[in-house]
Image (cartoon, rainbow, N blue to C red; front, side, top):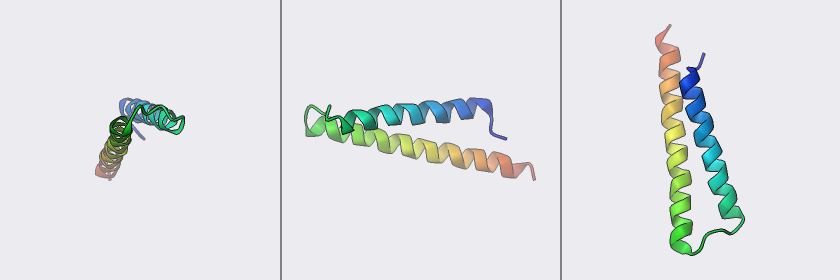
Length: 64
């Protein structure tokens, strides 16, 4: 079972990622630098979510 704090963290990261992705899709990037920054933010969210997923997996498997 996933820790409620980690579950909330995952949810908040996913929510923010979705907001930034939607913003890009709507054409909100003022220039290429802004676009690159937003894409970097999305990549960071993906990386963080992967790290958290690894931590959750280790926590679940350490009980065995």
